[in-house]
Structures are given as C-alpha cells and as structure tokens.
Length: 255
Image (cartoon, rainbow, N blue to C red; front, side, top):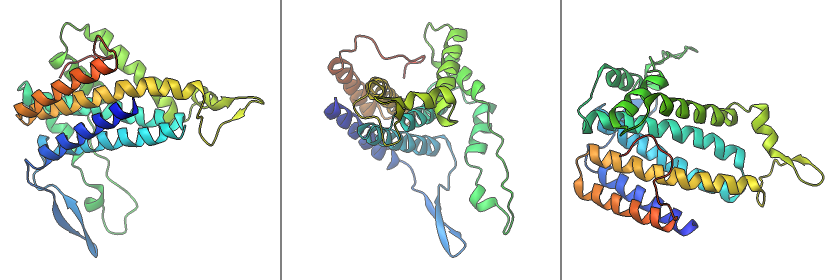
C-alpha cells in the first residue's frame, strides 16, 4: 500500500503542477521590509490551485504522521482534508456545471480576504472575513454533483463525519482517551505504532487518498484539461483495482 500511496501522491502532484502552469503565477507584493506572494487574479481557478496544493500537502503530512504513529494528529488533518475537498468540489462545480452563484462570490471574497496586508499598522485586531457557512457549501455541492443521492441523508452523514473528527481538533475527552491503553495502561504521547489505532487510520487514509484523486480530477475538469482528466480517471481505476475496491469509497458526489 505504501508504494501505491506514493504513486497516487506523485500523480496528484504532477497534475497540480500542470494546472498551476496554466495560469499566471503569483506576484511579489511589497510588505514591510520584504514581500509576500499573491495572485493578481483572485478567481476560482487560482483558488482551486491553492486548495489542491494544501490538500496534497495535508496528505503528505498525514503519511508522515501515520508512519510515526501519531493517530490523534492524523485525525486533525483528516478533518482539515474534509473541508478542503468540500471547498474544491464547491468551487469546481461552479465551472463544470455552470452554477456560479452569489454563494461562490461570497466564498471567494472571504477566501482572498488578506489579514496580513489589510491589518492596520500597530493594531491588534484582525478583521474577520464573511465566511460562507459550511452547511451551504455542502448543500450546494450535493445538489449539483450528487447523482441519485438522498440529499438529507448525505448532509447528515457529512455533518456526522465532521463532528467525529472535530473531536481531534478540539481535543475532546472521548478522542483523547483513544491514546490510553497498554500494559500497564498509560497515555501514548510518543505515537501509537503497533496498535490498532494505526490500522484504523491506515484504512481511513486509503479513502482520503482516493478522495484526493477525485478532487484533482474535479479541478482538471474545471481547467478544461480533458487529457489530464482521462489520465486521472485511468489512475483512479488502477487505484480501485489494486486496493480491491469494487465500488468507490464513501463519497456523496462523483467528479
């Protein structure tokens, strides 16, 4: 599985590089005595490249943490990846389905709100962006991309998954107690290699890799890169075959 995981991450990365080269690169913007990089065009495609980059980085980070046994921290990353994929599908569908709405405009305004450059000199206050509620992002995506899906059940499932992994983000007691065990019982604060927790995370990670490939495919569709879309579908089929998956892992939408 490690070899297939590495291959999948390589495919996602090369796909992102190809699409990254298709748009104007970020520009240097003066900031204090130095500069920061920012996209001059603050559009959907630029947002998709950034989200995909963060998604791939998160998968790489989860792989490192899994190899060293940090199951709790992997749960935090899984929670992050859930939202990033939701964002990718939400934004990409605006292009692929021609469903750009006021919600997408609001999302992009909040996404590009720049707390670094807009913060007044010497001020301790940071303006909060007008974030689009997560429920609206999920509902739009399921309605747009769901095929024969019970919308209410799909939204309930996504909310349940979010709640479970939020326990790792906010260090809830029930999640923390998963670190406790052994002989004699103790808190495993240096990783949990060799325990069933890592096996559980590995199984879940297989799903997140698959969903990462789906996200990359959706971005490629939004970029109108049919050869890349076809190549990603081909690799998705290989991934399913080599992981003995007869049906796509749990997902409420198809790319």
